[in-house]
Structure formats: structure tokens, C-alpha cells
Image (cartoon, rainbow, N blue to C red):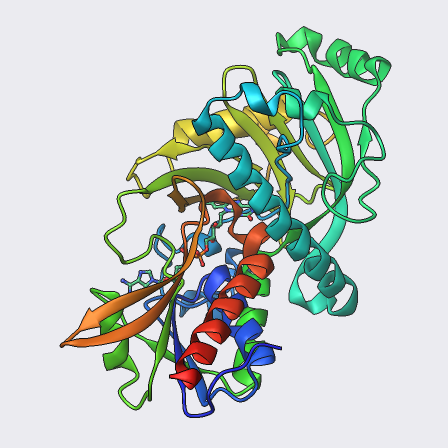
Length: 399
Ligand SMILES: Cc1cc2nc3c(=O)[nH]c(=O)nc-3n(C[C@H](O)[C@H](O)[C@H](O)COP(=O)(O)OP(=O)(O)OC[C@H]3O[C@@H](n4cnc5c(N)ncnc54)[C@H](O)[C@@H]3O)c2cc1C
């Protein structure tokens, strides 16, 4: 178990899925910490599915930059080429760097999947559900083509299965009349989906019940977190602010527009089209409807839903997933969702750093830049943060 001095306080900046998961992990793994406070400008909000209730109408509107409230969210693995693969040597150094990022994320994602599936079984009220994941790819990369049924794809016991050519032919025949592209690779596996409003509120509740504290404050810099917790002694700051609140040129935001509908689908299904567009359905557990998605628009700052994009998303969902509804008008639309993914070139930044403030050096552990994968990396990332906090504390105690 990691340890920390009992005279030390931890301040976590950010109440998204990364900040809250980190808060719960630190609380469990560092029981002797003096206090843990989560400081953030925004905290989990209720689902728009309960828009008629006073609880919803009294809630503050959520900004597009609070990505955790706009995620689907599902776990969709991204296969990588291991360094031992014969093709690895012929990749450029940039391509190898990307493959090693994916390999690192694979470890975080499979660790997270184990915990998410355990929570789905043990605490269904947390808003996680285990369900089939289905993928249709029109231009599959070699990493996918190399996979065989029975391989580990999403984690232990994922029942991974690649579709046979006959199954894909039947799907392509079904789609032919729509002028749809051809599916060249398809698979099915066991995954999980998350009702983001219920889950983040549940994480926050776990943290508060464990004695955690919160402070709502907009910060202009990470150092300002100290003003929100003036009583903090020897604080360690954990930066889970999404885009970092740090001068980091590798950060970009990626806009995502989706549609929340009341209709409930049975699986999470994704189609990656040859033209680079995506179509997906992500059911939200506990009657949270379904997310029909979605766009990925780099550095697009529009925070309102574009009606034309909504129409395209709904039409594509009808075309690609014909067993859901038979026409766009059959969708019972709740609202357009627009969120901005905090994407970082090279992957999430999880590392120890220092902040110099008023001549004093303060330890900061960064955990930001999860892009489109914050839920699926969350428990793995939190574990790494915990190791860094514990390691820092051990070094301090030896000085
Ligand atoms: C449309 C869409 C679909 C997605 N689908 C999925 C999916 O299916 N699966 C998946 O794993 N991920 C998905 N994501 C990505 C996921 O939402 C993000 O990776 C994740 O939410 C990032 O979490 P975070 O805690 O790092 O940041 P955020 O959720 O953005 O939280 C940041 C926190 O920091 C606080 N903060 C920021 N700046 C300040 C400041 N100046 N002062 C005080 N507080 C501050 C905010 O108030 C907030 O509490 C999706 C995202 C979008 C937009």
C-alpha cells in the first residue's frame, strides 16, 4: 500500500471522472492522509432525462468544457501493435511512439474495465451496465485484421469474436440499398456502458461519505487552489483539470456533438466509415436513454448543437443500425449534447511536477488530457497518480 504523512493534505483540482476517481482511490489507498479536498468550478449535475423535476431546473447549466457530463460513455478498445510484432520495426519513430501510447492506454483501460465490471455487478445503482459491444469498420487497420476470435480485446473474459465473412456479407447486403459503404471487419465482445450523470454523482457521494471535502471555485491557475483550501498543510496538488490549467502546447480540444434520445437500445455499437466519420449508439443504464453520435471536430469552439449535425447523426443511425428505429422522426429527442474532449498529443499526462509560488516549491501531480477516453482510462490513471503521490511522500519523509 502507498503511504503519505498524516500531516499532509491533498488538493485535487477537477471534479470530472478523472478527479473523482482519483479522489476515491487516494482516499482508499492513503488512509492516513490528513484531508483530501476536491476544488472545481463545476461538479456533477443531474441528467437532462429528469428535466421536469425541480432538481434539474434548479441545477446550473453545464459548460461544454466539463467533458465528463457530455460523454457517451462506453468502453471501446483500440488495438495496438506490440513491439515484438514483425511489422513494428518498419514503423516510423512517430508511429512507434503512437503504438507505445496505445499499449500504455491498453493497460490503463483493462485495469479500469475490471473495476467497472465489478462495480456494475456489485453496485448497479452506480449507473454502470455490462453489455455487448459491436464494431463495424469500413477500413480496418492491420492491428484489427490480425485479431482472432478468442483473443483478449477488451480485457479478461470479454468473449471476443470476429464476424465471419458470411456474417459481414449479410450485413453488407442488408445495407446495399442505402448506398452505404462496405463493412470489411466486424467484431463483438463484452464491454460496459456508463450513465455519466449517475456515475459521477455516485463517485462524488462515495468520496463525501469517506470524509472528503469539496470547494467550488473557478481558478485562474493551479496555484490558486491553495486559496480555496487555506487551511491545507504541506499540500500536494493533483491536477485533474481536463485541459491542464498549465502552459501545455500539446493540449487541444475536440468538439463532440451527439443527440440524447429517450429510446433505449440494447448494445453499444460503433461504425467507423471510410470517409472518417463515425456513427454510434451508447445506451445509458438505469433508463438514461441512448446517446446517438457523434462528431469529432478539432479546435471547434461552437458550444451549441448544430441542427444539421443532429439531422445527419439521426439519419445515419437509422441507416446503419436499422433494428433501432425505422425513421429519424421515431427518435424521441431529449436534447443535443455538445462537449469538448480534453485531448493531448502523446496521450494523458500523468507525472510529477513542481509549481513555484511566492518563492516556495509545491508538488503537483498532473493527470489531464484524457481526450475521448477519460472513463475507460479512469481507474488505471488514478492508480498511477496514487503511486506518484505515495512516492513523493516517501522521498519527503527521508529528507
Ligand atoms: C461527445 C463526447 C463523447 C465521449 N465519449 C466517451 C466515451 O464513450 N468513453 C470515454 O471513456 N470517454 C468519452 N469521452 C471523453 C471523456 O468525457 C473525457 O475524457 C473525460 O470526461 C475527461 O475527464 P476529466 O476529469 O479529465 O475532465 P473534465 O470532465 O473536463 O473535468 C474537468 C474538471 O476540472 C474543473 N476545472 C477545469 N478548469 C478549471 C478552472 N479553471 N477552475 C476550477 N476548476 C476547473 C472542471 O470544473 C471539472 O470539474 C467523451 C467526450 C465527449 C465530449
